[in-house]
Image (tube, rainbow, N blue to C red; front, side):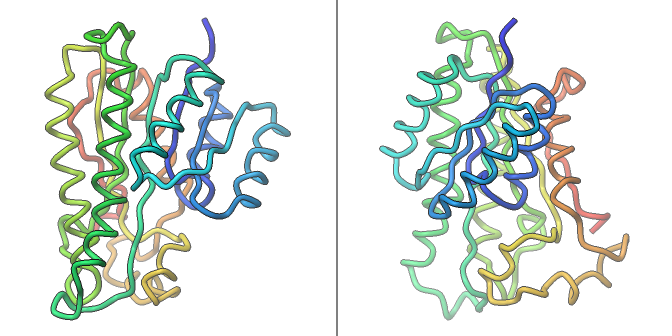
Length: 249
């Protein structure tokens, strides 16, 4: 059989890049999107290929439907039918209270974190579902513990977007359960990634680690391992699940 095909959105750094590396090492042909950092994306492709894997990097803004359609068409052309999708792309705006936010901020966050994930999930279902001639597959949505905690005084908009992603995960899982597709989510807690700098506090995890039962932030490889398990046959009876990777928080 040919190697499985995985698409990761937002795959050039952080959790996405760790997932790409691990997936390639486990035999997936990996396509990943990136928004702006072409040099970083190209370096990751080179790294994966040097280790014997297969990867392609595709520039795209998942908030733009045309970009998403182009990416899926390119994966079809280069690799064939999609086997797995990881909806990882997400944005975070500077920390502030809700009463300081404007609609443009909410629109940006929801367009990427919710609508982008929806369009990618739709295109994946159209390729994987036995209803549409596919042979099945798996989707993992990367959420956040913020959906439970709420993001007060920091990013309620981000937390709300991840709550929407949780709901879509459960609903879609039930919708396509008889069509060969499993849909699950991971909800990372504080993880050592660059996204905290986007919120204006690069050292945020150091401030929060004392509130985490394990007394430390997580590492991207720990989240990637959870994602790959959910994609694997070891999780063959798992769908509609939200797996917290949060150190007990």
